[in-house]
Length: 144
Image (cartoon, rainbow, N blue to C red; front, side):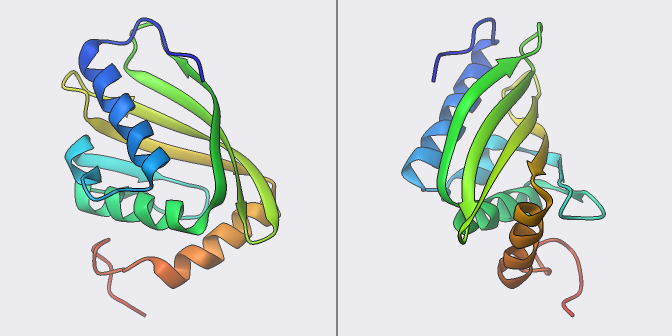
């Protein structure tokens, strides 16, 4: 994948760390990349989740569900603080496409992470798998 141009150094460092974690499947330091008040949104969840622990947990769970996860293209806004990453993956035998819309602060921390996925069957399969893996207590929700 080609490098993004015009990223502030802190954002470039944060994005590179994210790509490295995804490539190595080692999310052990993920929370260090996320702003304490970060927000995660996905069509699989009715309400967004906030806080670095919740965002890290959801991202770790999602990446554990996917197989053959690959980023294909990346784009950035003119100011370099918002990045779009196009990906493909499988959930079970269903193929899906999606984008990660990531907003960074001046220190290169993720402030906003929004995911869009298609087709609907792939999204439904992901949501079902996530229900099995997400620890609601980490998200600040009561189990059950």
